[in-house]
Length: 406
Image (cartoon, helix red, strand yellow):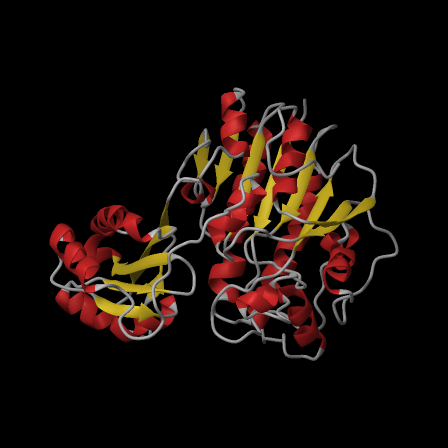
């Protein structure tokens, strides 16, 4: 047996999804457009970064070649390595959504074959009966927002009224989500989390994938800021995932960041929370030091999506990618013979695209370890092949929806 380390760069799509047009995302390409903007100088920010996108380590693992598989072209302005050292390719999603649970569950071997429920974009987002039940069972005088919105924008718009009235800020997006923002001090973090648990139960009949707590602090729109105490309340996956199968086999599943929330804590045997990509990387390295043969370390790096993709921040996204890339040698030095690392993503969130929502894209799959020989596996027709690669590597029985890529 060996160990597996599965890192999801949340929203790091590479374009080319065969069904992108059905989602209104034909032409979306998170990596390609970031690279294009950086090459043109539109990714520069004083004191943060400048110049073409520079990802030497992921490029050496096959990132640019995976992007060419996905879209037919190399990302503009990036240096192509003379040699690739990893097993690389691209993967297309078969799940019916472009949301976080669908992407992660499919990565873990369980595609979503049903349709999620969504709230309408026009008028009030939430039905009156649902709002009435939330107010009654949650003991609040009303709600603010009740619409599709960007989280930072709606907090700036309603934050002061929320602090004055105690009414929570409730909003949604094109994903299957019900999000609740509330001030950590004036409303209370524990009260917010309890309200989310109530709403989680109330939206089950609407087939909503997640209820998300969005706590914030500050005293005016100029200094309102969301904290690291976000919580996601997801429905459980529809069938056992690679996490459940590993737990049943007596292995340890180290869930870093919001992985536990995404899987409704099913199959998670050890949970570590951290705030920010670098803290998540540090927590992952610590878990690697503890992991034994047969274990999985599974990390979601949320900043790419939450801080930069949804906020359409090209320089921020580029800088975050470069910072992550610079940490990969730290990871490589900790690997033992037989270990495997898989870098991938769950969907796209092209920061140059219209709106503020996720984008339907293929994702990179970059694998490396002391025993892996460099090659391309081409384009996988489901993210589920990633989970089955982990299953085979860790020596457990295969699942029903994919096959190992190595």
